[in-house]
Image (cartoon, rainbow, N blue to C red; front, side, top):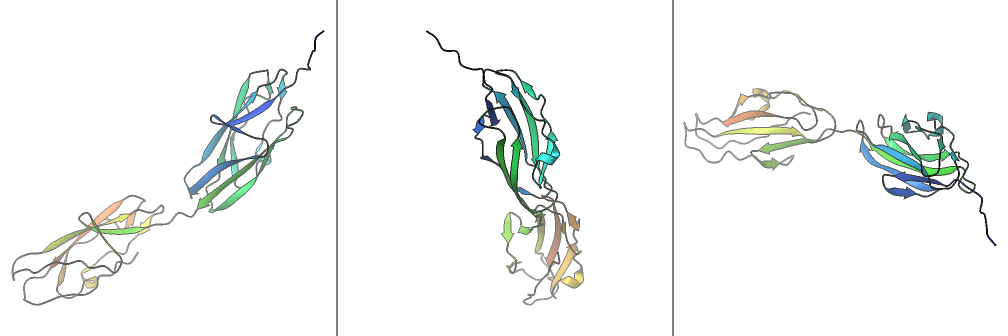
Amino acid sequence: NGTVTAATPEIVVRDGGVDISDGGTLNFGSVVQGNSSTKTLTIQNTGSANLSLNQITQNDLPAGFTLISSLGSTNLAPGASTTFTVALNTSAAGSFSGVLSIANNDSDENPFDISLNGTVTAATPEIVVRDGGVDISDGGTLNFGSVVQGNSSTKTLTIQNTGSANLSLNQITQNDLPAGFTLISSLGSTNLAPGASTTFTVALNTSAAGSFSGVLSIAN
């Protein structure tokens, strides 16, 4: 006696080394607008007959996702594999989701459905002002100390953009400083890319004795 079983294809889809089940989810994460989030998926035939696939096109993808490269092969022998690459479209902020259906000849997983989802957050600037290595909070205080008349007390402050979009600054002038303080050097740059920084320098005017205080407002 003996049994002969029919040769059948079997579709397996992987994100890296992780299997995605039919009806499973592929998460592109949360990405800042303009950055990238890309997934290269592998389709393997683990069955015993050829696996036929319909070619994946941009029209198969839900809104918010872009096909970077289509299937390298649409006919997979047993054990063979191919890949395709999809990216989250980060040109506009928003939450995106939908189903990619991969038509094939696997008897119980046709189509093979994958739920795609991802979030694009708006790019925003973020101003940080530091005295040396110490952050100064918005509304905080910069203390020039107590100085003998004729001596000097100077502060060079750093402004850094720790955000994800360009930070625009109004140039600082002497008119922006309160009485008793002198602008030694203005901003080296008024347009800071993400991660970039610039400095300006202010001195306590020690030509006359007295207590001096006031607010410097940095428009941005």
